[in-house]
Image 1 (cartoon, helix red, strand yellow):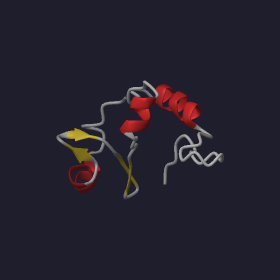
Image 2 (image 1 turned 90 degrees about the horizontal axis):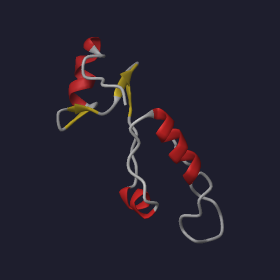
Image 3 (image 1 turned 60 degrees about the vertical axis):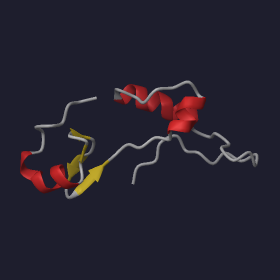
Image 4 (image 1 turned 30 degrees about the vertical axis):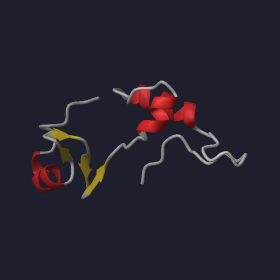
Length: 84
């Protein structure tokens, strides 16, 4: 994914308090919001997947999981990728 360490010079507060984890930028501050992408390690591991490194990989993984019945009740309750 895009290296974002120097992208947001104007939003230092967000970059240093919300968007950085273990010294790496993990979220992109936009208009006072920070977008993060989280994943469930156990689901990825069970599916033999690794975390996406590109947006194309993220979309492919979201499509793969979309509609999955995670709790075994016969109804799809996973929507691939939800961002809010």
